[in-house]
Structure formats: structure tokens, C-alpha cells
Length: 330
Image 1 (cartoon, rainbow, N blue to C red):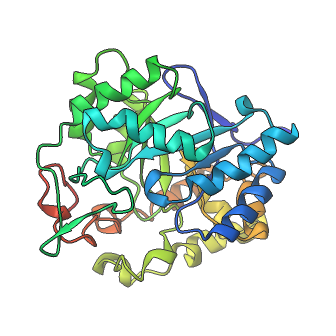
Image 2 (image 1 turned 45 degrees about the horizontal axis):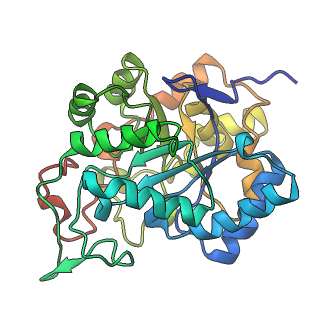
């Protein structure tokens, strides 16, 4: 069967990255085990995690079983993880990547991202991802993004990361990092991006600079609204999965709205990492290759963009985070 969209994208170092992966944020252990096993059985070959998700050890156990059984070779899988806020110092990059590799039971990750430009002071306790002082996150105002990036470059040279990138960075921060890079430039940017919040200026910058984008919150992250309040611009809009435009297009192709929203971004070469622990939903999300949206349908979905007002994740649910000099979310 000919795919309507490529199933991989190529990073700036030639590494192939599957265009769809399994997101793992906010998943309980038993659900996570079931989800990863189901996803791998269905053909997923890209797992997205982070030190801050506190599930790398669970993922590592499942992957070890697959590798040991011979059902999967390490080189068949693309694993992304991320440097957490308390590891945001050049001298901590190596130790924190080592912690992730140990938990994942891997010798290397395929992509290592700086999770956020905001650094937090490390008190030696890994369980405190965002230590508080007087009710506020104990931010580290001396965070040096270029020095941290140079430390990531060394991990590529050491073979512990095959590619490196950033998450939740803006254009100016990416320009600064690429300018200060010794040899390796940003390969991947993971950001909030969906039909309501398309970040078109960032998309253009990444295209011009050979940076592959990964979208999180592709469905508008309905599961996060308990701690990430909906913005005034989004409150009056239907949930993305219930958007009349997406529903109409889904009916025309006899697919789900989730498939439409994923396909819309994947057609642009944007990697998608939908999170689900429901095997049926995991399977549906993976089936985005056997239909093709028309140019007019793509244009309709492009027209749902409401700009900056569509941003949900402003990193302001952590008190004091917004006082960091690298915090740029409006």
C-alpha cells in the first residue's frame, strides 16, 4: 500500500525519525506497560518520554523484554527523552542523561532534548523536579543555554545521543543556541502545536533552518485542563476533537477527528506524538497513512489557527517560573 504521507522524516544529520510516536506524559505504570506493548505490536517505532515524566524506568522494562525476546532490535526503535529543569547546568547534562539511560536500560537515545529553557536549582534530590523556596520554584537565573547546548554536543560525540534538540524554545533562543553551537545545530524542536495554535512563524524558521518540529498537544490537550486553565480565546471554541471543520472532514474520509488532526500536521512534515493508554485509540491514532486530505481541506484546517491566543501551556502553573529570564511565554 502506498502511503499518503512519508512514515519518517530526516533530521539534519541524516537520521530517520518516525513521523508518529507514542506520547507517554501523565500515564500510570500499569496503563503505560499496556500502552507500550500495544503500540509496539501495532507498529509504532517511536517512543517519547522525559526525565520529568517519571516513567523512563517503566518504559525501559518493557523495551528490555522486547529486545531480549528478539521481537525488536534496538536499531528499529527511536527513543526521545529530555533534560529536566533541575539538570539545566552544563556540568549536570552528562549525569542526568546517564540517569535517563540507566532507567531506560539503553546505551543511547535517538534524540535528547532540552525540555525547557528555564533552569531550576538542583538540591541533590531527583524527586524534587521543581524545588520550592517560600512557595515559589527555586529558579536558576544563571541558566546558560549555549553552555548547556555545548554539553549536549559532547553527548553526541560520546555516542550517548544520536541527535539533539530543544523543546519549548522560541526563535530567538534557537538562534542563540545555533550561533553558539560548536559543531552540531538543533535537529528537533518539540513544541505545543495544533490546529488552533499553529505557530506559523516558528514553522517557517524551522523549515529555513532544517529543524524538524514535533507537535505536542496536537488535540489541544483536553486532559490537562484541571491544571492548565483554558485561555479566554479558546474557552468559546469547541474542543479540537469536536471542531465542526474536523468533524466534517472526518466524515468525508470515514475516519476519526483525531486521525484528521494528526494527518494535517504530518502532511507538513511535523512529527506527532499522541498520548493514549487505550489500545483501540492507540491503533486509530496510528492509522493516518491510508487516506489523503485534499488541498482545500488542508486550507480549512489551516484556517482554524487563532495565533498566540491558542497557546495553552504558558508554564505559569508553576509559581515563580515566569520570573526566570528565559521564560518567554506570554
